[in-house]
Image (tube, rainbow over all chains, first blue to last red; front, side):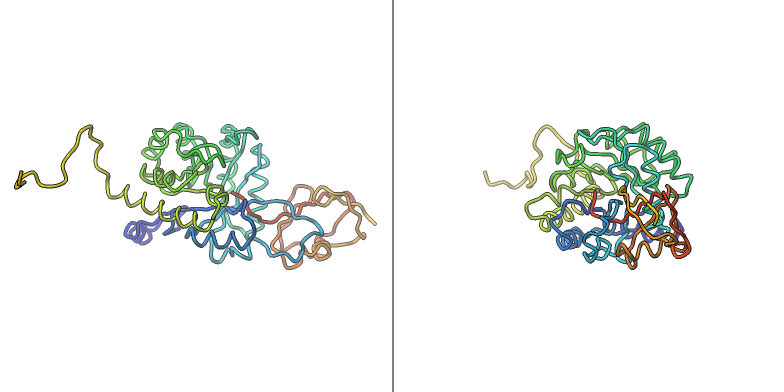
Length: 269
Length: 67
């Protein structure tokens, strides 16, 4: 990052990923919405600047006039983050990233996820490390989905990933941060942005992630699966902003007993 | 006629077809797609020249909603 961008980013409290600055710290997925219009409205309400998309086979001969996701979320306006969701081997994940780069005219920022199990959708960390090595060698900028293991997070950073994205809880579970000490440990030791990816259920979960010092939160189901996705997107935007501000402001220490807020002198009793 | 496998489905097409013509037939002429033939990516700049051969396994992918 050049010095100018660095000082500008610090002044605006920008999130810097792979040398680009973003004012929004809420990254959103684009799956599970009712239709593309709802996707567009929720993404706008979230204030997201980075949106993740899946790479899939086209449906030959079907819906040829149907609008495309990238028509409603144009790459000129959003940073598109293609993901490798659904990949269970390093080979498939790398293949998907190469296709994404061709699809998006040489765009190299990707979200790597290699899953190990259909029930938990937990990452296969061995395959994830392997894929990360190949992708970094091929000049991809890798934002990596991983478990909340601090050692693994460190190894992924050493390989050269541009952001570490530990899960809060299983994908789509809405359970919130299950091990905040692990997330804290990852945050405190990382030299690249740490974003909680997966497992957020509601606004307070996102706020907790940010209060722990995470650089951002990535979510999909918590918004798309809410009764009112657009309203939830707005709530998440506020929660991420509030959590970030609270982190920067520095919370008071927890104490066991009370500490009066009003002056103790001059009481009439 | 030649036989190809397009997104996992067997199809026939005229011999001598280019990838660009195949994409146009499938309705993807102006769409944002990426193409792999026999696991090798064919860059957009080569679609017009690339001939489709018998037995080619072709994948056409696009971006869609996901998290």
